[in-house]
Image 1 (tube, one colour):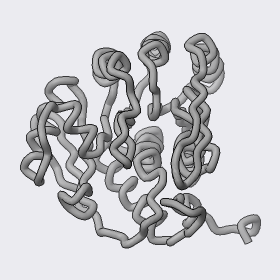
Image 2 (spheres, rainbow, N blue to C red):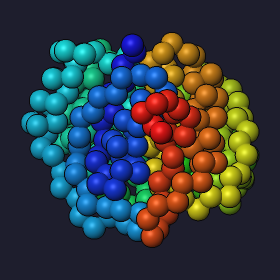
Image 3 (cartoon, one colour):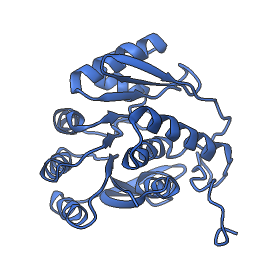
Image 4 (tube, rainbow, N blue to C red):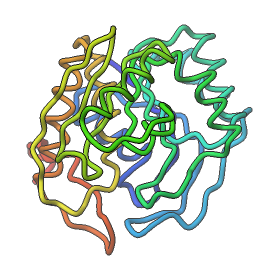
Length: 265
């Protein structure tokens, strides 16, 4: 069995963060492991508190994983401090990690900034150049490119700028009134659009975590990047179309929509 590691924060309500990552990786046929960057007290209505791990303890978690069950792919999500970002970069270099997918969690759906300025600097200087692919949403792509994105042509310019700046592929996620669910993959000087169907489901908690984890899972299994993105988009469409409805806010998706067997009945 192929393996994947998520380095991210914990979501106590189970819809995003490492909980969403582990469910997604499991549903996509790989063995999931985690290194936790922060505990969050959150649910479908918002985050009420964050308790960050220490750089030392994060390093211990990463050592424990890499020295025993070496991951075939790594997904990086919420990391809120420069010190933790440095720790992750050091360890990924030490263990020559491959198939690194970075979901640059910088801006909340509400528009709130999630990273301190020094953490943004550390993220762009240390982690992004190590990535095989970045998966920014529109507000994050605006920060990384220094551009305003209003339409599909702007998405292409921003994705090209980010890709050239950090030397990696960029999956610029649509939505945000620009299109329904069309994402743009830019790499090696060219862009490819992945068309998606809009699913009228208000419960979208954890979609970014889920998409990046699904991409990492498919890379771990040996699929190329284009196929990994295509399969990840199909998976997230299925999870949204299952129309799970939990909680009082923007609820989680049904990550296990395709799981059938005697123990799920």
